[in-house]
Amino acid sequence: MEISESKPQIDSSENPRSTWDGCSVLLDINDGDRLVFARLSAGAKLKIGNKNCSLQPLIGCPFGSFFRVENGAEGPYLAGYTPSTEVNNVQEKGDGQSIDEFRDNRALVDNNKAQSLTGEDINAMRQQGATGDEIVEALIANSATFEKKTVFSQEKYRLKKQKKYAPVVLMRRPFTRSICEAYLKKYPNKIGFLRMDTLSLLLSMANVSANSDVLVVDMVGGLLTGAVAERLGGTGYVCNTYLSGSPYSMDIARIFNFGDEICKRIVRSPLADLLSVQNGIEKPATQEAESGNMEIQSNDQISSAVSMEEASLTSESVISDPIPVSTSSPVIKMSKPAKLGEKAPQEIISLWKENGFSSLIIAAPELDAWGFVKETLPLMSNSASFAIFHQYLQPLATCMHNLQTGKMAIGMQISEPWLREYQVLPSRTHPCMQMNGFAGYILSGTKILPT
Image (cartoon, rainbow, N blue to C red):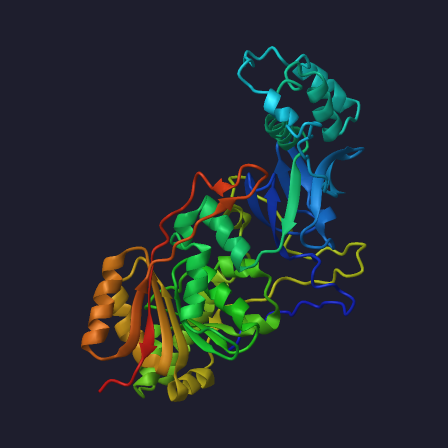
């Protein structure tokens, strides 16, 4: 029995680079200071600072658009904003020496007396309809030490005030990199501390390509399942397997805005069902019916809309109306999002029995690596690639030793990804002061026919 879900009706004139009613977006506030996942609808709101703003103006706008909080007759709202492309270059004197060389911050005393503009004055400007940029310029004009600061200190001061009085919201498309980076920054434990370069190596070492049938053990919130499905692009299948009991969470995979075609390629199947078919054991009809009913009930519970408490990376929730509301935009014609993670059809499982899976990816930090590999490796076709992620080295070393002893795989190696991020700015390019140096380990190899 299949659980049908209404397919989103997209107008032929719709630009796929633009948002629509019901899609998920990643809102980047003040250049990474705050990251929020939200689902756009007419009733969705986001609290920025101490102001609640509706997300309806974001519907129909291209991904990558900038917005700012403006004061209107009906209250604060998000208005489109075009960031300045001007670069604050250091002014040069005639003798070739920079003016900044004659300035330093040694004589500045931080006693909170340099600013003559009070809080009451700022509130009065807001009541008179002053924009955030006007408030920032007024703060700079009333600062007694601004002109004495270096150029870099002036830019730092201006940026600090802009973040407070004129916050900028960047609407980003939720795809593998942006989702992984956002969760790693705020809630790394939910994705098993899986870094973006590690996730890329997992997909590469497992040879995930078009028309592949990938067996996935995903205990990192659905990030691995969504990354594999995104790379397949609606071809092949992603089978998310699990031990007996309830399936693993796939909440993150629902943020990818997958269409109905890709959602059909993401299926679930308990490991016991795959092993029973692999061994040629057929389940009784009554048992299969009961199992199907239980699976459908479980899928109904897990495939429900992701709550904003789970999707948001802050303590503030973004409430969205699940019922689509028509707007004036001609490209918005979207129903509720498609469902993913339904039970794998029996005919597909039988096909996997004949041909086997072409790739195996395991990201299960809470399980024994060798115990799961020993059960899932027979489901793979010969010469299939596998990649296993774990936070610690010893479980993968034990798994690699057992595979070598049993002559079950060749070309095995344990890799430790390493990534260094650089700050690239004028006259101050250097590695970032705070970096995540540890990213776990990956065991990769190729399955062979045991001799």
